[in-house]
Length: 254
Length: 254
Image 1: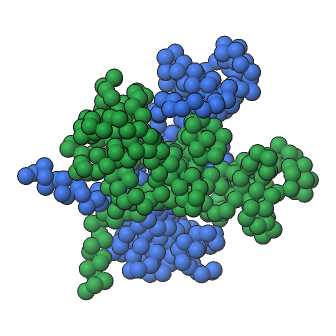
Image 2: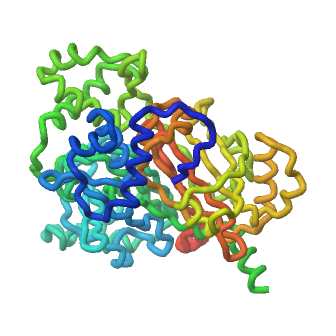
Image 3: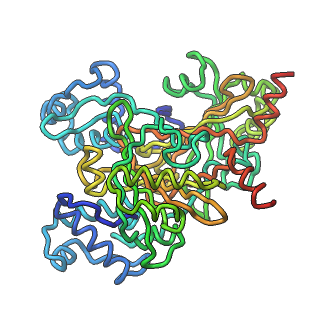
């Protein structure tokens, strides 16, 4: 977006090529179409292959192109908007309609960074629920949901179950708590090997990491670290908490 | 985050190296310290330079390393949390304390993608306010705020002013409207040449693109396309609109 040039900024060669290529994608290619190989493209646009490769990398970052092993470079469909800040959804998995599928649950020790977010000491047991988010049949995100054992004391009775049954049990127990609020951050990251596998990407592929803290009874009850495919996802947030909204609604109603 | 390996996933060589390097950064290097050159590092860890380079690229994606021309590769400070979804802030620039500085305002035609978001036809005049967001004295984001002339009809009287004075005038007029709500999306992008210059990055550097639509009187009153440095920023969102919050507050108060 925003292709308007507002001032004369020095543009490197590949950047200009990127703009030209982007326009060619709009006019000459269909979604899913395989691009000619690099040699042909470089010849067609009269540029060196190194320049072409840089431009293709930019277009991949912007979600215009997909590079898949054994297929080549194809024109990507528009990114899918994935709702992240759904205000109707309190606890993870509560509505059951947001596309998150519980996979399994394992009791392991969280990393130091996650332990700090959770406010748990070393050695304190934490349930880790793994979930995958499906949109239109495709895995778009992989999540690790960290739930300190102290948040779900009722779970002790069902120690025996495992796999997705156990994951569902943890989610159910979590949903009994009264949610006070949550905060969330989004940052760039690279896919860990097991997330990459789930998301059908290579390890290290750029991802958007969404970290959510769920608060209950004045403490952090759970932390979710969700990894979204950066190539195909546009994360969307709908705000409904603005004070001004009710004023506007009254005005319209009146 | 989440260094826990939950299942045996095949990890490429550079991925393992990345983990080792990441630990070395924690223990052996201080923030801002310049790393040894690639030849030395490859020798120290017993890997090929291509493998090393891939690992360094991953660490750069994750915000652990910064590569600057003329300086080399340095250990990055932790990413700065930048509040994006500030619920106290209705219109852009209203509070004046969120670090956004108006630069200038130019009447140009928006791109087709932005025009579609704004719901304006071709040729319809749109004010474009350029702003930069400063955090701790550093530019962390560059914004193009698109305001259709129809949203700010009162502005016709001050046609003469230009630059940041004009930008401020557009923002002031916008703030007279009653805000009904906004929606927001976050996606990966690459820095346009002029944004890159403002953010002290090379064109094409990975950025987080935050697109916000502001609604008033049942229509889109403005669209903001803000480009945040992906290397140094962690975007934070605080939700305050959950129905559950008031229930929790009552419970605590009672």
